[in-house]
Length: 89
Image (cartoon, rainbow, N blue to C red):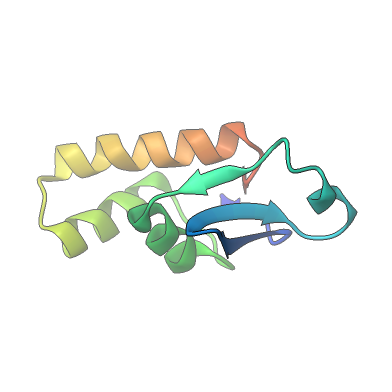
C-alpha cells in the first residue's frame, strides 16, 4: 500500500490537515485532522510502499511500546486513512 501522492499535509490555524492537491482541494467539507504521531507517520511513509507491520515497527522504535500495542495502533491509523482514500492498496 502507499499514501496517494495527491494528498499533502498543511498546517492551518494550528491544525495539521490533509488536503487534496488541485481542484478538489476547494471542498473543505472533507478534511482530515492529524495529531503529531500521525503527521510523523505520514512523513515516514509518503512516497513509498509499506505494510501495516512497517508502521508498527516505526511506532515500537520511536515510542518503545510493546509490539501488540503498536500493531493495534498501526492498524487503526492505516484503516482510518484508507477509509478516506488517502492510503491506496
